[in-house]
Length: 297
Ligand code: AHM
Ligand code: MG
Image (cartoon, rainbow, N blue to C red):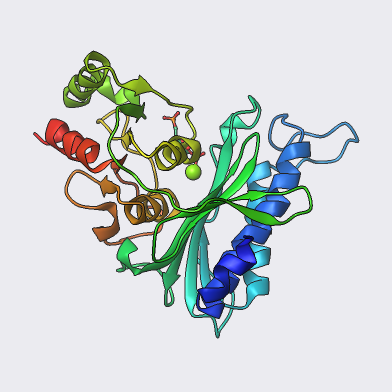
């Protein structure tokens, strides 16, 4: 099955918004494969000014969303304000066009993250008002994972440009795998250090790449595990609510997993401002509970 066929039972305008992201991902994929990875703003071998890859990716997503005609407002991690794209659009889209862009030069996997929200704007809403969310991974294969109102599914980009369904149903159970972000926080956050000890002493498998998208994707593919990114005074939690955490929490929860900011589900958090950061833990229910128990003083 391909993506178009999969979306045939989705409300047409929502399907259009999702297809706009899928189209943008194809274009970003082409840019990543051939990009020179020199310093941002440097010149390429032809003496032309290079555009930073994340700026290029940002531009591509805005173009595709505008073309779709169904997105009223879009907000990107790369921009300080939301942008109106259409008067008639019924959705708002928030996205991180290239998450983990500092991993491009070392050739580790990077991703695009997005959430499609009901209505115009984000402030005052919570992630429960998303209608769909997903992400792409640019790795050895380019994949597109989407959750609408049931378990997430994965598509893989084919050489002819088609998206082929490669995982029909992603489901999270329990299992010992951990992806611990922001270990710098352990110097002050002793509770996090204690949790790290727990994982190390209890035979957990360490799987951490430093890219949030593949680090969370593995939980969905292996069906188990935990990703965490808490903070401390000197090393605060830096991941963003609407661009990174809420969309990935939506996908994880649709797969039967859980999310937490140490008080509640990430999806229950009200958006106060666009650049809002949050503590985040995503994964198997028991693992997210354990994170809450260890880190709540
Ligand atoms: P970015 O949006 O600037 O790329 O930052 C987000 C990334 C995540 O993919 C990853 O989980 C995190 O930064 C890791 O950051 P650090 O290595 O600084 O802890
Ligand atoms: Mg990011």
